[in-house]
Image (tube, rainbow, N blue to C red; front, top):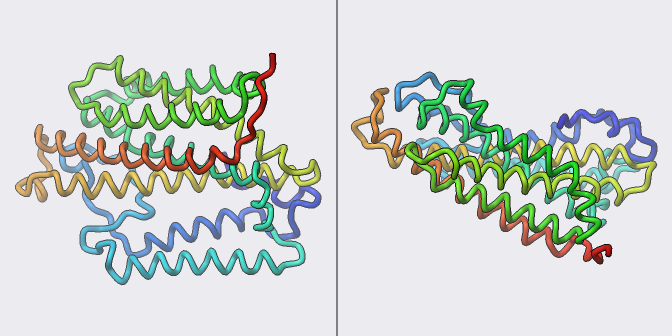
Length: 317
């Protein structure tokens, strides 16, 4: 999933001489600028007396800097200006690294948004899931790895067949079904608690992996085939960049929701104490539920936005 695709530079007709990392780096800088004024705050791991897992909150808003603060609003404005400057330059350049006009191609635009939305949901899951399994359920790292096996199994089994399935029943049907399954799986995970049995949890993971397996190969194929062979490197780079940006935003959004709701749900008496309590675990699972629901809604909105751009393929008999 690296954004350092050599195709950004070496594919004829794709770009000029700009370095391959510049486009993702500039777009990532917009995310970084937004989080420039944010400070780390204790997470669920510290509150229940466990060793904290590494956390990344690119757009997380600290309780000391609310959404309406000049620092946060200024960071968003700066990010918007940087992005606008990049687009303006690319539109005027003789050999732009990425010509914004390519997004007028419906299949490319739809595929890019769709791939970003899938990885938005998937990496939001990655961010929360290990914390839930280890801190709320008390699983060891080995058992945690075994518990998430429905994810790779579903992805591997379905993704190998999804393009062929799309050829038989239609791209729109396959991609829309995949996004609905992804959102449904995330919504289902919002109802799990530390006492939830494994089978319902495993089924939710299987729905998510099936949705991803149906959606990503079909959308990625759409991105690549929407451009002429001479610009295949551009398509590959866009596909990779969409994954990375979607993943970063997914972690940012779910991390922000999780941290803010956990802080509000945690009893005041525990804010400054790292002690293992059922109240802290309950606050974490409540915050996790809210985070998953927010992510599921955003994924569904993205699905609605993408659906009109999908081809109405006639099923093959």
